[in-house]
Length: 623
Image (cartoon, rainbow, N blue to C red):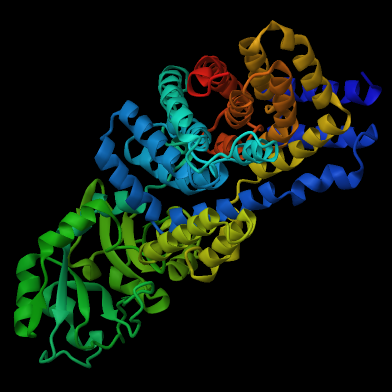
């Protein structure tokens, strides 16, 4: 062994030890390993930095953005809702449903792309089912790799062995030649992963946020103030006497004891991918137009009297109530929201009447309710006097609520308005996000462009079409720890190959096992490939072992097909470490996993599945 080889393997062992300890961040360990390889002159600076220009790393960046668009438009929640209906809230059924759905997609799309599409959906599914996302995300990553064993295009090693067999004139593999053994691999793998995930992965920290979150969600605020029980929709008809009048002329509070919180009116957009209804906070000078939908707060009797006297049409209140129980869309959107306001003891608003605060005049903000000593005041608010300890529920444009929060001497706005605005799904963009995701998948299946370009096209479209509000929001969706981890570890595989460590291992293996019979050699090739793929990319591993497996089989006078399939399967099924494949790295931070979590679940699955494949390959492809 050369000095460079010894140094490289030593750095690898130390890095693996630090990964397992979990005391130092994984991305920092990867960067330190990278620096050491340069300092010992094993890698040139350009080689050391090549990982960050690697197409896999760039594709991961794009996929995080695509996943962010799917999440922020509410598409993830809608799809997860359908999956939840199929599986119920049983953790085992959820696991199986997620794995089968992911495997099906993984058969036609790269495992990295599959995980990026499914990750926001699965996180939303876990939250809806009150299950720790960590119970589902590692199986998600593993299922994407298992799905890759089903078809020719499922994973690069499949195409590598097809090329090797074709060039040698041994066999021509078709699109579904991999399916029989792939289906068996998927079934066995799913059973093993479900069993180990259920009993090994942690069940705590269900929400992943919980303890840090101090302010209530928008949905909780709406429910606490019983907004849906006091909210009515009234539509303006063409013959109504209030047409073209300003709100201040109607004197709704004085005459009917009701208040108007917002107005929704049709826009000129005919494209279904754009909003066809505009939402705006009702201000004193807002002018009423035909077909406007007025959102009115008050008792039903008063709202009914207001509608009858002004030739207005009351819409179905019960329908609103059902929807409001499920979402905040009647009280908050990307532009308009609700927030709770408190008053410090020194506030000048203490003992002021609501109508004297100037909230509506100065900030264009409506007051929807008052919480006072555990009770809620929702009607006749303008003549209520603010007392110390009161909390007001206000509604307005997020920017105006943020402006109000700057009045820190007089008011305290609970939470961060602009952050809350960013958390509100852009629901009307969900079909567009779905179309972009489908476009990306189709481009990757048809292989019209390189996979990384297809992903970047989808990422740019997510921002350009407004599925993500800005580039800043797009950057926030990227998990930089995963990106740095993969970018830093790719040069390690280059070092292992350049120093000859990989070739030394593979050659010695074949020389030592070749005399022990075809089954022993098959096991040796499988587990050597499985071991090496922990440290270098599965494509590079398949390229390295495919000709060695072919040569060894031909020398023994047996069919090389089972040996080449062993290379492909072993290179694809890599679960034991988080940095071995992009899917593992993608879910590591989102699932709050440690290095040892992958060892506890992934290593047994990888070994047991390997034993099963070695036993079954000769059945499907006889020697």
